Image (cartoon, rainbow, N blue to C red):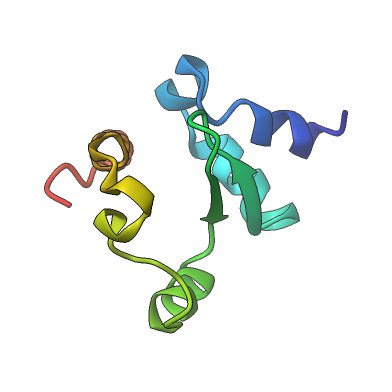
Length: 92
C-alpha cells in the first residue's frame, strides 16, 4: 500500500484527528480530490485544496446539505462539526 493510500485509510482514526495537517499536506500534493467509503457505507468526495473546494461548492451536482442525503442522517452533521472543530472552525 502506498503512503497516500495508507493516509486515506487513516482518515477516521484518532491519530489522524489529533494531527491531520501533515496528511492533508500530502493529500493536497498527491491526490487532492478522491472518493472514499465512509464508516456507514456511503461514498463521499474528499477535497483538500481550496481552489477545488470552491469549484465543488459552485457545482450543482454536489450535495452541500447533508439533510438531502438519503435519510438525512444526523451523524453526518456531528462528524462535520467535529472535523471543523479539529481544524479550528468550531462555529462552522
